[in-house]
Amino acid sequence: MSKKIVVLGAGISGLTTAYLLNKEGYDITVLEKKNEVGGSMESVFENGYMFDRGPNSGLDTTPLIGQLVEELGLQNEIVYANKIGNKRYILRDNQLHPLPMSPPSFIKTKLFSGGAKLRLFVEPFIGRSDDGYYQSIADFVKRRLGREFLDYAINPFVAGVYAGNPEELSVKSAFPKLYALEEKYGGLIVGSIKSMKERKKRAEKSKQSARMFSFFNGMQVLPKAIAESLGEKVIKSAEVNSIVKENSGYKISYSNNGTAKEIECDILLSAIPAYSAADLFRPMDENLAKHFEQIYYPPVLVLLLSYDKTVIKQPLDGFGFLIPAKEKKSFLGAIWSSVLFPNRSEEGRAAFTIFVGGARNPEIGNIDKEILFKKVKSEFEGIMGIIGEPVFTSYRYWAKSIPQYNIGYIEHENYFDEFEKRNHGIVIGGNYRGGISVGDCIKNSEILVTKIKSL
Ligand SMILES: Cc1cc2nc3c(=O)[nH]c(=O)nc-3n(C[C@H](O)[C@H](O)[C@H](O)COP(=O)(O)OP(=O)(O)OC[C@H]3O[C@@H](n4cnc5c(N)ncnc54)[C@H](O)[C@@H]3O)c2cc1C
Image (cartoon, rainbow, N blue to C red):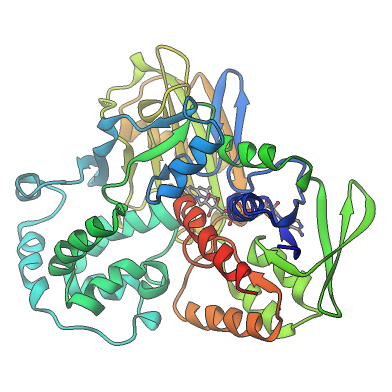
């Protein structure tokens, strides 16, 4: 308890861990480069619109989320997605098809051909594969479920979660639960049924059944509330620029609004992105820096478009839609934000959040954003049957968005473990370890706390 802990980065990973440690009486300080907290969780107000420029929602997969909401007094702020958000569309041949959610709708859907549907019956009889760390999610799905399922279900799904490319993501690193269904139970269909029963026993929710949540004033409400509860223990505009090993602890130098400062600690938790950690840890371990640098964060452009409802032909009865790469559009998909959550647009209007780029289209980094914007807007309006101009537009460009758990990612993870063993008191965390979703980052904080307490 007398140990001093410094957390680098006030994203949801760093803040949740700091919050839990603080509650147990540990002496903690959080250092955050920007003058606001939340990291990727950015909710801004523009012209009467609440624009979530990073995550638009989270999945309530751990009881810790409910606990945080209650302890921080956010019960009146949390909002759950409109039930019609369970309906998700996939684009095929320029038509939006609801993703089938039940056996009868699967039989009827035009999203998959008859051959692709029959192919699913073979799945239980396909044997286990070799090491999934070096197998892409694309190869895994092609082998188990067939090519069409990869193209029209998994490809868009991967774009929606990671802004990723299924040919590059490691199935075992990026989708460990999916891979475990094969590894543990021998197949996806049998495994889903058995693991559902086990989850019930542990009172856990699967990502499919967990409720989707946000906050009335956007996702950033949560990190802001955590930081507020920690008060002066969170130092903003504090960019860490060096870490030096000292006796049994560490000396951290940072620039606080341009003033050079130092802080000493026994335990250091790094919860900053891998690309930021690279330079910071280079003097301590060149190989660690190389591992950090190799983690790929593709660019993503997030657009907000709002229209009067009267100009939209497409019924707004779902979550939004995802676009398979095969459809050759210039964006990945769109969330119908104002359908899902309240306070996302004015009465009589609809607000849409559109995602462009990702590992599938990294060239967006070199394209003029105005030209890209026009192209995406025109394609989006075509798909949605919109005849009319938007009443409001905005965008946020992330040059480095989401870490990709690509093939061979296990080598980074093994090196992080090894580095932590060699450097007692340093813990490496953040969304490039143990899952990228907001829910996973929150869940992982409990693991980080256990690790820190054992030091
Ligand atoms: C566009 C986008 C859409 C997303 N959509 C979803 C979604 O819908 N649902 C979902 O569950 N997840 C989504 N995610 C993923 C999720 O938001 C992130 O994985 C998660 O918020 C990451 O949290 P983190 O704390 O690990 O890292 P970050 O949020 O990256 O926080 C790291 C913090 O470290 C700070 N920092 C960096 N360098 C330094 C330094 N030298 N000194 C001090 N501080 C430093 C940064 O300023 C930042 O605040 C999305 C992400 C993006 C980018």
